[in-house]
Length: 269
Image 1 (cartoon, rainbow, N blue to C red):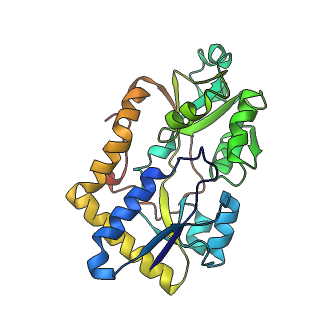
Image 2 (image 1 turned 180 degrees about the vertical axis):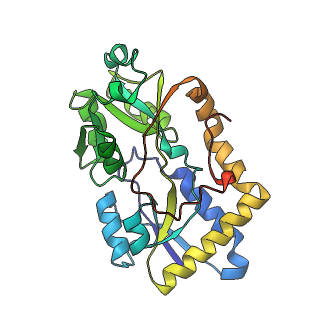
């Protein structure tokens, strides 16, 4: 089986280290049953290009990490286990330092909606944020989002708890006016899956990965990797004491396994 995964979009893009470790572990654990595999990066694709390659069943990309929605579920094959326990759905903000004073008195969605938001072109969050009433501005290139935030093009850049600390450390030297907002936590359900081609090969790859993930969850291997990557992050960002503002995700399909509590992170933990 050839697992061709999407390469980082820049040398500063470390968003998926955890996800690929989870996937490789699942593949290693299923080698006896399913046989050997190859695991290699693709050429660089942005998220719209990744989606196009997957829909076209291109050999240039055979596995993708992406949030679920009704459209993707009809066009691709997914493993319906949130890779990071939906921790990506908990968002803290990268902001300019001067914006913190404006945000100190924010404790409701109505107040937060007065701040413009930055996102990457093709990101699945855009429709969720627009549905909630946010003014969303986009950039084609990942690195340009940090440049535009620093330059004042938009006020806040919501980042997943799993991303924000490493991104801040990567970019704070170049953009010294940026900081991580101190008080707020935006939440929306954003279960992120491994996706495969809608083909016999894609179905078999998805079956293999699902069996590996279920075994990891059962044995505790899944939680061990999660804690290795994120337990310190969760403590450092002090999620429990932030004011949480929740919005809905109208794009979710009915197949999302909300009933399986072991698959979901709870900020009250």
